[in-house]
Length: 116
Image 1: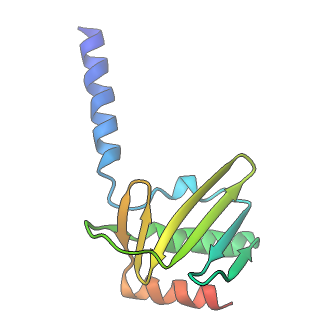
Image 2: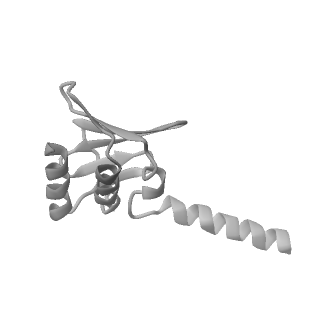
């Protein structure tokens, strides 16, 4: 009986994580640097921890949405042993778990941050 309840608990945890409504910020927050790659090859490197934290907060506010898009830009989060990327087209973001939409305010904040 204990093994059955353990399996049910594990199943619930896995199914809940599959239906996350926002991007999991934890996997991006400890990045040593972020490379923002624009569509036509321009690359901007962000090493400032405060800017990375703000970028992660903005990205973390995006809400999951079932829509497909063609990415124009990409954020590459680099840690010492890991690299994770998020594709972007305007207010839409996509990672390995799905597609997300930024709200109007956060989309504006992201554009301001990237202009710096």
